[in-house]
Length: 266
Image (cartoon, rainbow, N blue to C red; front, side, top):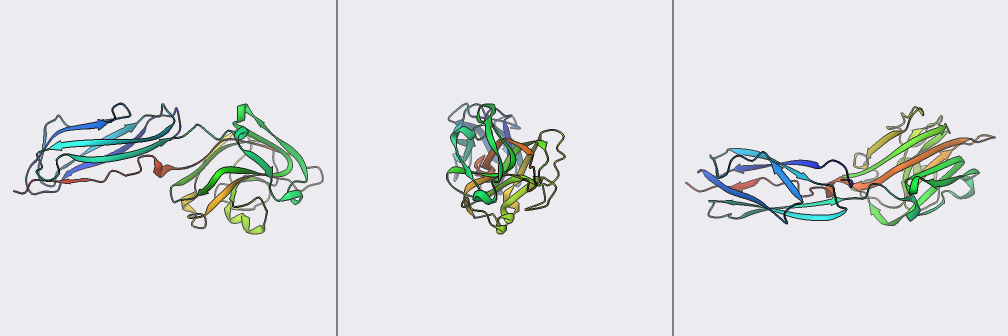
C-alpha cells in the first residue's frame, strides 16, 4: 500500500472445524496500534461445529516501512490455544523520485534523435519532448511476480507516435522489447496494446497488473523505460510521466489469512 492513502482492508474467516462447540475468549494484536479489526461478535463467543465468522482487518498507512503483526486468538481448544496468525505488510513511499535515479539514453542515438527531458514537481514527474527514450536504472534488480503492479500517471501535451512505459534488463533497444513495453498513447501501435486508450485531454492514472502477462512473470529487470517516440521531420511529441510505482501487492497482508482450524473433540 502507499503512504498516506486510505487503510487497506482484508478479511479472514475464523472457523470451527471440530465436532464440538468452540469458545472464543479473546483476540489481541501485537504490537498494538498497527492494525484494527471489526466484525467480531461479543466475546466470549461460542462457535458450533462447522460455524464461522468473518473479521475485517485494517492496516493503516501512516508510516513508511515493513511491518509484522501477530493476531492471537485464545479459546478453550485444548490443542491450539493460543492460536496465532502472522500478518506482514509494507507501506511504500508515495512514488518514485526521479531525482534519486540515474536516467540514461535508451537505445543510444537510434532512439534519441531530438528533444530532451526534465525532472519536475520535486522529482515526481519526468517530462520528455521531441523524439527520445529514457531508461531509469533501478536501485537493484527487480524480479516480477504474479502480484507485481506498475502504476503511473500520464499527461500528454503533444501526441507522439509512441508513448508508454516498459521494463528491460539493459538500456539497449531491440524489436523484441515490444513484449515488455506498455503503450498508452500514440499514433503508431508498438508494444502491448491492452492499455492503449489515452485520449490526451487530461492526466490519466494507470495501474497495470504485470502478473497478467506470462512473458514477464519471473523475469528480473534493471530498468524502467519511458518513451516519446516521434520519427517525423520536426518531432514535437511532449509527454509527462508522474507518480510512478513498481511494487508487489502481495507484500500487503502477505499471509492471506489462513482459516483457523480448531475445535474440541466431542
